[in-house]
Length: 257
Image (cartoon, helix red, strand yellow):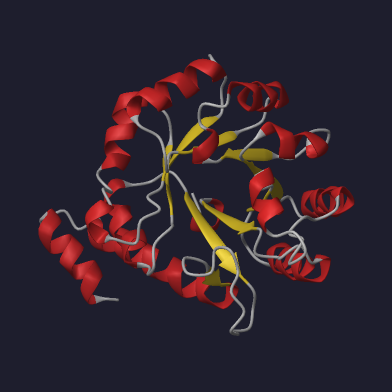
């Protein structure tokens, strides 16, 4: 499988609620080789905190237009959701796939809404213990097209446990990917040792500036993506050299950074 088909780009709310900014992300995506792009609907409390400052919401017709344009290019648009009350106004839009944020992993009402869509679901495990994951999967019942995302939201390297990718595969018998939420790219390349089924990367706009965006510290400029993909491919090649031990393999990857 081509790496561009394994990478899911996340705008999140990095568009700051501006259609002009959202269109820049969309246009980049449509012209690229990437096949998947997501936007995010945040929690009600998030929007309330930003009252009279920034309105991070995009209109419904933007998403409908984005989906239509993406389908013309054989691409897909997804939506990340975290609670039913903010998702409900957009529930009649037919997104191609959904990401269930970790904070909502046991939100039975929201999960049943997503289940009724019968679309691929990616479940973020940023806040998911084994018991929470089991409960979540029970809510989804025997639904197909379920995927798990290993994500650790800490910037402390001691908190990262990439071996959990393998553990989750064996434990729950589902595809498991890596969701990047770290201050540099190192965990991405190290994660290739555990063969994630896909990668989630937050992206930010084309030019560097001093403006902070919600996922600024762990998002990549769109111009960085090609180099990151090249290094992932390098890591995969290094790790297929059977004569090298795991320890040497990982050190080889680090040396190329």
